[in-house]
Length: 144
Image (tube, rainbow, N blue to C red; front, side, top):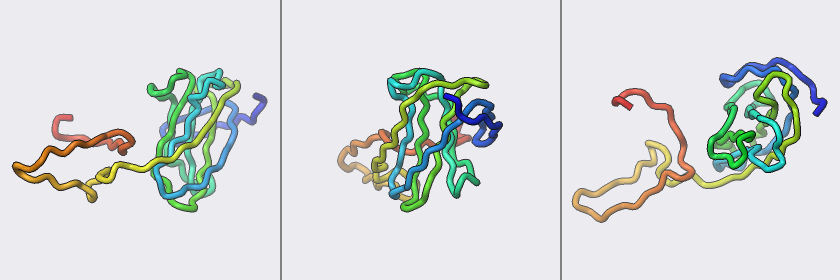
């Protein structure tokens, strides 16, 4: 409440509501910042900046996986010792309120990227896999 208001655009988000800034240092693992806390009492958005606020890496207006409809999440692959800046602000112009923010880290599945594809054997044993915590790619083509 009573934070500075600036018009910032980037990451596909244009905002004109009060914002506050936080930093977190990457550890080389996948990280998620979240305002899905029960303490969040207004519709929040998140922007993730790297390189001292010069490059917007990701933005989120809302996340359907939040237990709190006012929350937002941003997930990224962090670089060890890289400082990231998180910007929290309201989804609606001039909106403000209270929120809880947290950052967690976790391992990606071992075959999360194409270069790490797991081999399957013809007539071999069934392989059980997971997409939990896997990276989401935007892919066009193949009718998908």
